[in-house]
Image (tube, rainbow, N blue to C red):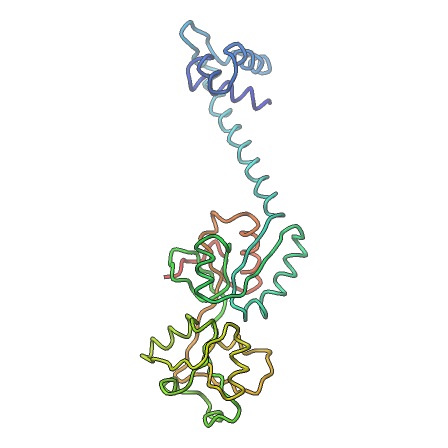
Length: 299
């Protein structure tokens, strides 16, 4: 059945005349009339009663009218689904992430995802928590892999807990402790990555009322760890940063123990582009996270 005929019929009924329907659809009144007449010929009965002041539904038309509306709506759903599917298999996904996650968790996920969706282009920027939040809030990144954002309205999909640790030179007096007391940070020289603005570390110090003596700041975590190995100070960071790097340092858990949650954050799954939505659902499954459709917003 021709969808154009259906739309002409429904519009004529809703507007009450062929003239009004023609103005909406960009046809002459005669053109609308011909479309409806052709539809009536297909069915073998009249749908509308023509009057001098407009049109009204016949008894048969009253029965057909709701079905035709449903038919038009289904067509819209089909085109919407087709558009989403088309977008799902092509597009761009921009990710802002902690360097530890970008280096150790995302490569395998991106490899498997790219094998399934080779037309989707994925970009990653490894950066600080502050920069990550700004990128997501301004739309420069579609999603992030980090600790929770300050904007609690965003969708938060947790997938892991990462310990906070102390990184000390091997010859440090406290290097043989089982755990490093966080209280010692009050007097220690601190080497702070993320240009001295590591939000997770700052929050930890704030929790225990510590005003750290930040001796040096760096951009990269690896640089901070190498500075620690040279005896320039100690580092406080999440354990994921220290994995797979062989340096002359000792990594100790903190006392009392402290962790940060890691997860995927994006403004909304409902409004995300199809390619982004597909990647988020894929990554969440691979990381063993709760299904994004049922994840709660971070509070």
